[in-house]
Amino acid sequence: MKLRIAAAAILAAGAAAGYWDRSVWDGVYTEEQARRGETLYQQQCARCHGVSLTGGEEAPPLSGGGFLANWNGTTAGDLSERIRTTMPPDAPGRLGRQQNTDVLSHLFRVNGFPPGKAELPRETEILKQIRIEAEKPGGR
Image 1 (cartoon, helix red, strand yellow):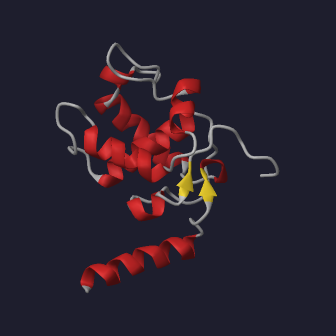
Image 2 (cartoon, helix red, strand yellow):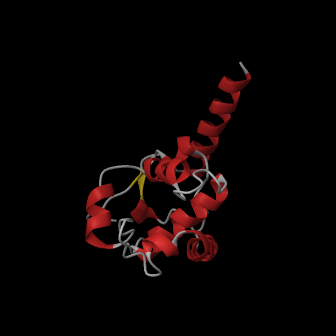
């Protein structure tokens, strides 16, 4: 029962914050959050994925056309869960949800998605409502 109430509260909070039916082009993170994510990225991710997110011998790029093509049509929640459950490879899950979300914000900034006024939330249920779209939709 408590789990249902908690899930309902998360969904209601997401609706109130306007996260439903959004894309990465709608300003879903803040500059401050992306800066925190950049620091974490340099400490935790750059050794494998490269300082400029271009990938390494065994790690894929986290920016550019290949990255965007791979994640186009998925959600921020999908990418967040991949980070949370598989990174870093020597200790998956070592970083907390907020840290992972901050790193995700850095990835979004590097890939040219605009910042907004509210931080990217750390709850997977809300992140799954934010689409990753490689190209900016017309009219936005």
